[in-house]
Picture 1: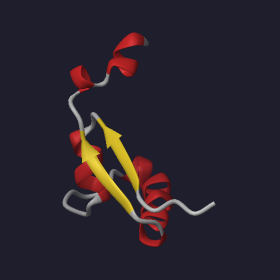
Picture 2: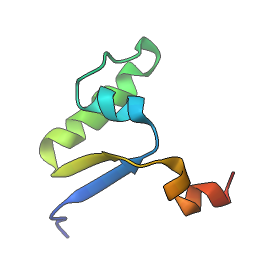
Picture 3: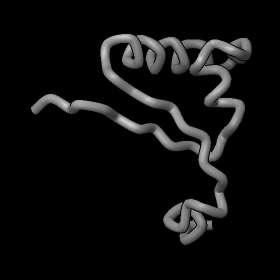
Picture 4: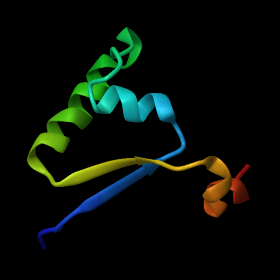
Length: 62
């Protein structure tokens, strides 16, 4: 199965900036961020910031 486009929604503005290369990677998460960025290079992924209030599923677990 091949996905046409993946949309990654997160309420972390800093994660969006890091994945897009706007902000520096924190040293403590460099391996994880590099792995995610490797996947982003081979897949069609759009990284989107979404306010936490707009994510009712995440609010349910809060």
